[in-house]
Image 1: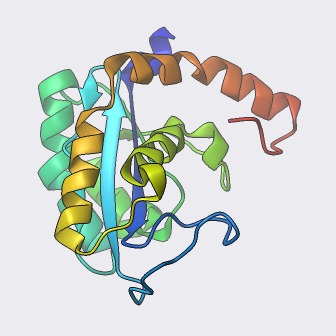
Image 2: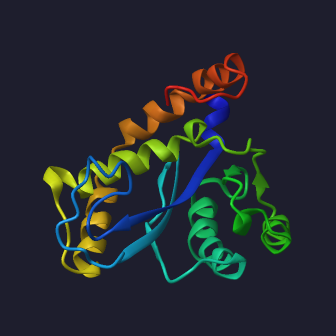
Length: 187
């Protein structure tokens, strides 16, 4: 567990007014809102979680760098200095030359991460828990503001115990990925 205490896990997640993405037989779209959604970015570590950031429009490297500079850097400076390991997936805005250069200039160590491995990333578990809370009892939203307020409230309710549990699962996740030769795990 000790080596995972220095890691900061991050990702983006989309939330729709009419319910979560997923199997269509599961979710019944009652209002046909025209695909209105909210994209968020967040990160967490053994020392807490960032403020959840509402992302504006389509993301590119420039917008992603702004999110990192305004939200990630103050978060890690307060908790680690720059003595942490930053995890992000292989999305093109994360791996662009501009983003890599920015992270290097900021002395941020970026964890090597296998492609197509969301089951390895514990923030995906956070997103699943968050989506279940946001859309509890089949809830849908009339406005983006209502959706955003609910997302923020649910993010604030993520417990330190849950974060610890997810971090403690990392050694087993890695072993399972190796045992399955990179195939999907139970996570």
